[in-house]
Image (tube, rainbow, N blue to C red; front, side, top):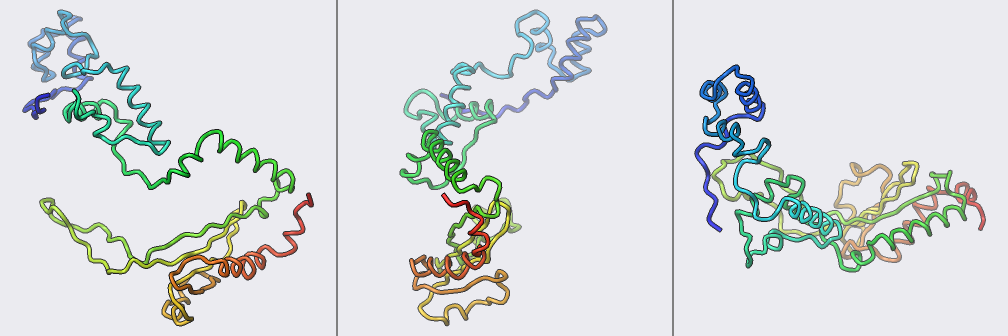
Length: 273
């Protein structure tokens, strides 16, 4: 397919002005030459429309090689595949070794503004296999049964969710003012790839517990190197050789943070099975 070249003049008139020009010509208020001058529309274009050579609402440019209906199906399938974690890249959509090329892709992307190129997040194959309508439906059915069994449907303060997250110590450089001609803009960062681990817990009512923060180190001195006074209010700081989660730390969080926050009073509200 030949390379798409930029045109010097490309439809300098609006749809509104075009409709006014056609209506004026049909009603006899203005001639084609006068309408062309008044609304900055080529006289040949008005003539083609008046003689029926071009139908109204016809898109500008050549007719797409692939029918619009087929392109809509491609858009739908691409969106579905991306949601399943099996998204197709530009080369796969273009079928580079077949007929379509870059010019087709630019036209396809321009005609279908609902899709674009995006960087997918990492998604393991095991999670992808588990993330389907059947598995998700079974999960929520089991969750509903358990909520009914424990009598938690009207007790959001008793439904807690805990998660751990690794927080990298390396910052992400913010945007800077630079010349447009610059190809790359370096942002200085350190050589470390260290990260801390944070235990966070919140219930369905919106109450949250103080976090447990695990830093890298083998002694209490590792914790002392941080400005804990300006950290999260009520946070518990501890250490581990690689700032990873261990069974001992999990038990420490459950015993010293979760149970103290939850308390026997709330635990006793749960209906005995």
